[in-house]
Amino acid sequence: MICRKCGGPVSADAAGMTKKMVNRAETSFFCLPCLAEEFKCPVSLLLEKIEHFRAQGCTLFEPKAPEKGEN
Ligand SMILES: [Zn+2]
Image (cartoon, rainbow, N blue to C red; front, top):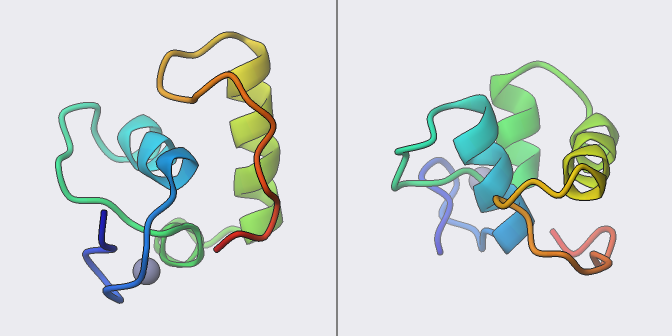
């Protein structure tokens, strides 16, 4: 997946966050830094939310430990 804003790589978690924060039917995604910019929040907050949603068993996020800072 390619970020629709900067053209950089989009991780599965970032794609999940795009769906969560923009639209579940979204088919073009943002990488985490661009998503953070769009929503005026730090990347660290997005990572925190991803962990939160994953812990809740949200199906948008794969049930595995993410490599922090992979973006
Ligand atoms: Zn981007």
